[in-house]
Amino acid sequence: MMQNIAIVMGGYSSEVNISLKSGNVVYNHLDREKYTPFRVHILKDKWCVLDDDDKEYTINKDDFSVTINNKKIIFDCVFNAIHGAPGENGMLLAYFNLIGLKHTSAPFYQMALTFNKRDTLSVVKEYGIKTAVSVYLNKGDEVDVDAIVKKVGLPCFIKPNNAGSSYGISKVYTKQEIQPALEKAYKEDAEVLIESFLDGREVSVGVINYKGAVKVLPITEIVSENDFFDYEAKYQGKSKEITPANFSETDKLRIEETAKKVYSVLNMTGFSRSEYILVNGIPHFLEMNTVPGLTEASILPQQAQIAGISLQELFSNAIETSLKSD
Image (cartoon, rainbow, N blue to C red):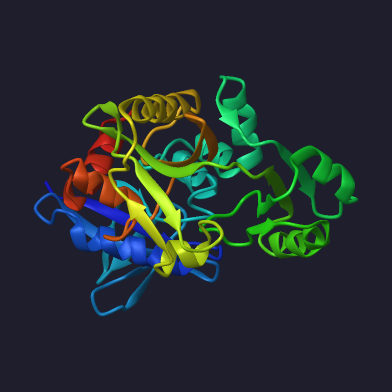
């Protein structure tokens, strides 16, 4: 029997357009012999299903059903392709949990935890995972520039605590640049993380549930043409993404072991793509993305392809893993 799959995309954050691209790629690659996919736009002003002519049908929020041509459609599973709020921060997934609807992401608490960079760092540090030195600020806090520089040094990174796709991030070289960088970050979030600069090679590592086991995908090294892996480098071709990365076997194993350990200690399921800086052979954890980009050009699908996993297989596996979960 064909299963109805709601592919949720859009969201409430600056990443809405990136999410729509990811969602449409999932829609185009789902196996039509197993699934009947539906494009579901979750936007601030509406929740709706779009048919092939882009006609909209409103989602019933009582049970997340939709009525099309007088037929009520109930979904068997939700494929979460929302970057940022409310799909990546756990809010929407808590709702799905309440109504008993399965989805492809981790449980809502794990999603909320990993979306909060500060809280994620506080957990992984307890398990011996190396990280940058950091300072945390709430909007409205008094800013002691000298104390910040004394703790994290210069240059440093100033970033929104709850945001993705490098929105609001600045690399700061002088004390005078700190306040403008904070203002930029506060446009994205009321919480800000300031981190020391780590001088090393940047890598991105996908870890997923695949056929019942935790699988570390081939490592990608990020070589940015810009000062760091910012929005332009990520989405406008200003970087090289080398997959598989050229590391010694020792460094490769150390990165893979660290990535798998982080996935485990955070009690993750579903997709993840985490960023690390390799400093003197030691991976330093930066952050985890639990709804990574899913277009053909995105990092995790590239890693999966090199591992011999097609987009159709990658997406089918996520759905089947969800349907088999308790």
